[in-house]
Image (cartoon, rainbow, N blue to C red; front, side):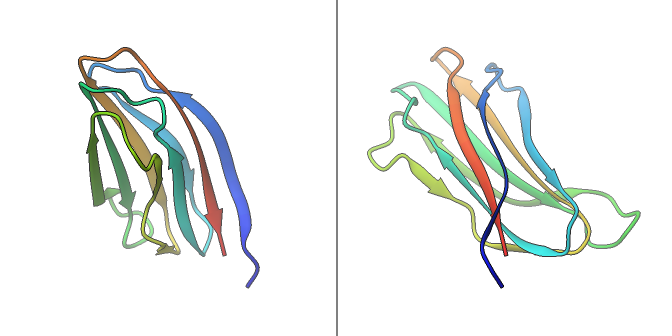
Length: 110
């Protein structure tokens, strides 16, 4: 299978612990989120969540969470590859002492 860009953008996190959805995907594929955290500074915390459904009509539930704090020496972050035939949702939540930050991101599929 060929690697493809599924969707991309730059999301300015709402801050204050509000969860922002980056993408909701429903195709039968493997997906991987790639996000640039270069704008994080000391005092920032960023949660990156992956949620999925097991069965059609089921409930979307948390599958993975990654938490990063302060400025990042290696700012590019990747999720694990996730296989999905129902629904996959990628979100970010920024909290901490810093101001709202912009996060460029993309979801690749194959």
